[in-house]
Structure formats: structure tokens, C-alpha cells
Image (tube, rainbow, N blue to C red; front, side):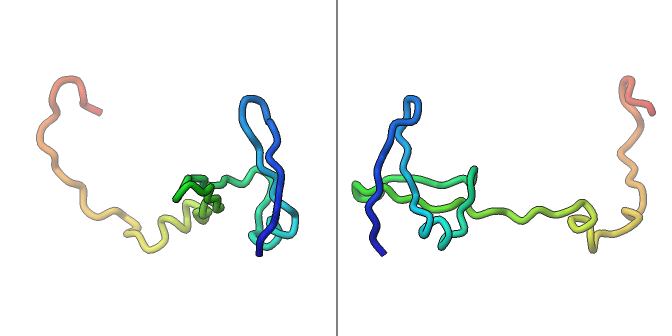
Length: 82
């Protein structure tokens, strides 16, 4: 699908309008981050892939509960005694 759009000035930068039917098709929302680069003298834009957000419980799922045995690291040095 080809579409024509207009470049506007936004502060010291240029802004490109993304037509609604394209943003809907790509699932873009306000404040989404886009990756932009130049390839073969053409502007290439694509949405940054969103990393899923995990809770601490999800991140630690499957980890060893008690952490195993305490490791002896040697005698204390300096003022590191707890």
C-alpha cells in the first residue's frame, strides 16, 4: 500500500504524519517509539518491538527457593563485618 503524506516543522525537527489507516494497521499509539534509519537513500521507519513486562514473581518463577547453602568467602577484610 502506498500513501502520500506531508512533512511539517516541529521545533528544530521535522515531523512526518502517519495516516490513521496505517497506524491502525500497525497498532501504533501516541508516544510509541519508532526506529528510523536511512537505507539506500530511503527513510525506513518501523515500531520498536515492545519487550513484555513481567512481575517479580514471574521473573523468579522456577528459581530455587532457598538459594542453596551459604558460600564461605573467607574471613572478613577491613571493616566489612556485618
